Image (cartoon, rainbow, N blue to C red; front, top):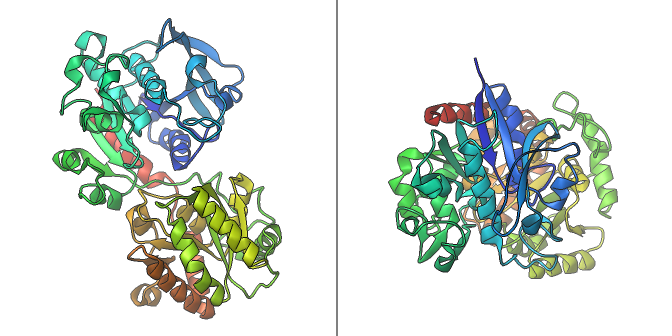
Length: 485
């Protein structure tokens, strides 16, 4: 059977450029889908880190004027990925991150920078590359949201050119809103500025465009798909999403089990897996040493790998920390984000040397060691479309303690009495997402830690939990075939 051609469009793709879980998903999907008869190429912007990681790239297309300057489409293979890179130095060759300058301020021309990515995606869908044209265009988050608009309204209003469209929202809170005055600059015709087009609260909504104009919508967990239909979690888009509920599906994310493999992870002090869990003890010791924690194996270490924001519950961690320390627990945290949270955690580490270890920033190797060496991983998010850190925790035998929201609710089996009696629990859930709720979960964790047979059973269940892409890849492949022309 001829593989189904799919063009994936995103602003991030691991391992070339990453600020969050979007990159992990975009980087893992192609390999997972190959076994399902899907040949996926991934279009990403030519950020400096991307350009530095694609040696041997060849130009396969281009534009004389792409939102202010010339641009090329480069074909490359990197990290096992079949990539198309939009090489537009006037848009992407800048210091800082993908979206912000070195001081953390959003680039003022972000609407045009990512509209250019979408324009290139639509051109490829219309046949801009000789010998290759996708049957499906799969766009991710607001940065790729206008691709469906350019297919609908571009090329003289020719409409969708025989290509199915799928739009995945990874986080509804980030919407890509731009002033209405940019309509012409973004190459959108007047008729696009309509409630059934790109108009959103008097401006241009890139995320809204993807949700409204794509053939199918997915999000990254079944529970989040239900949550965003409500005014509380819909961020102003719940009405549109309810109207399109028949086209909306929640397909749970997975993790790359080759990248996250405790039996062969170079970042760990010793290998282990479900069949050889004893190797985990060396990683517990290595983590204590790396984070400057007291070398006491009897003391459980709580791990946190997160962005330090209100969404992720950074304030709840600080509020619950005294209770955790009072129960004899220690904390190993890696993250960066809001200045107040960073300062509060630094102060906690200074006030409790040997009990609280904090690293501000991001370190991929340390993230792996925290997963492999902590006893429990905390994820107190106020909302969480899917979450990947709890999946990594399961894979590495760290008992996840998670808020009962979004994908956290879908991936962790709470250690309640029934689940413990049935021998199926993999972690602890709590609700509501408050400091008191987190403190109560830590009390339950303390009781579980002291019940060693129950603890070992939960940890063993976690190590065996399915966290890969097999089931989810099948869901995406079926969806692509629904919409393919």
